[in-house]
Length: 337
Ligand code: SD4
Image 1: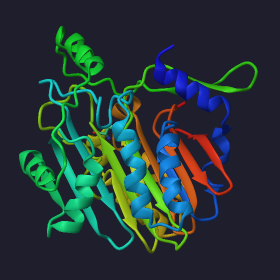
Image 2: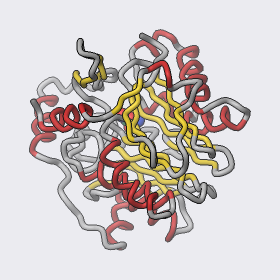
Image 3: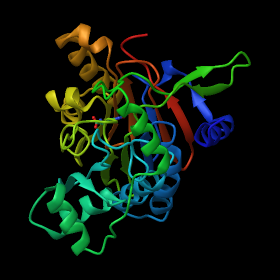
Image 4: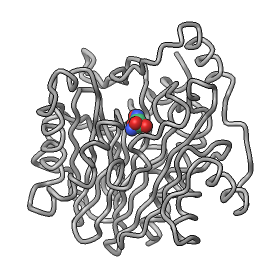
């Protein structure tokens, strides 16, 4: 068993996992503070963010600290260090961060910097801008004390070299970890993991919301391609008065509908976070049902009271939640079975 699957299965064995049916209209609710993040491996990130939240820290700090855990995890092939490179063999990273007051920062297609989430935060706090890309982002990061590193691990290089043999630019978009129920009713993970972006949302003890999203994007993408993850409104949106949302999956489709912003707008008009995520997925499916059948998109949302919900196009999506009373991985309902 690969190290990562081993860690995941081991963790999941001791984790309470709720069924798919209890997380949509009856939103997962938890007393503040709490932190949620996409996918089961978000547990590791949540644990670090929780340290900040449990000591009455700001949700924004919790998000940054949590995201850095995943960025540093070389076994995660689509975030930070160890992420799969683009088709030219370059690891290019995207990230953004946003607080309850609409302050935000974003970094796109940055190379050689292990923690794009922190660079995004620096852009937010130290510049009059919101987005820096490519070489300019790298220059800014180096000026601010970040180290230039090789992010292409031997494992990811090997995967890229294998891909090069056919060089087909066809990202596999619906292969992911499936959370399935075993005969003894416990849960396990199987399948190959192709998308692993982490989107995180936190509500701190003072009721402040923040969010972050960080990724190396689609494996073997075109050089310079940027997905939804660092696009404020698409991969992430936070409105401190209403709620916050983040997305994972095929970024192009999330950008097209400004997905996370739209989810927050549904919450604004009265939908629960789970219903809001479902409405967005349905909208995407309705626009092009044929296309929707072969792509995965997952939304995760929280309202300002700490109600949480999610919905995905395909089964297999899950998210991790940590509060003072709960720590679990939650399987998400999907449009297609
Ligand atoms: C992207 N949305 O770059 C990201 C990829 C992703 O899980 O979420 N993978 O399009």
